[in-house]
Image (cartoon, one colour):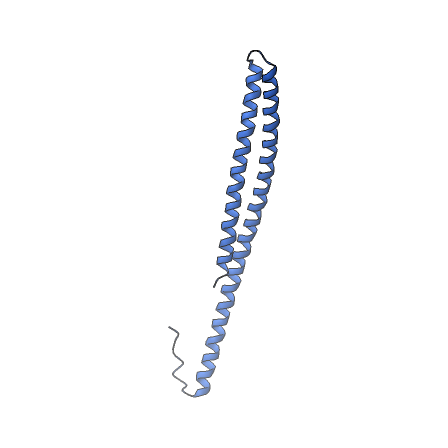
Length: 131
């Protein structure tokens, strides 16, 4: 509840002066809140942009890992068709192809998590601007 007008002056001029001063303080408080909200929103948008950039980088790495996995899998399949018996080299190639596939899946999952984090940060930034 706002404080009462000063009781030492009862004239209309004194009450209006007090009301104008009270309004000015409220505007200053509002300005301070707006500046704080904008500062918070800017920080969150910066973090969101960084998360999006990291997600894009991870997505590119996942694509490269998937392409490597495909190439290794095709090599393993080609070698398997030529082989009459299994060898340690063949098993190592198979393991390498599987590991590349797993790497791609992990990177893609991490990219999706970063993208989701960026979405949340952007939502928080928007919410920060609601006064």
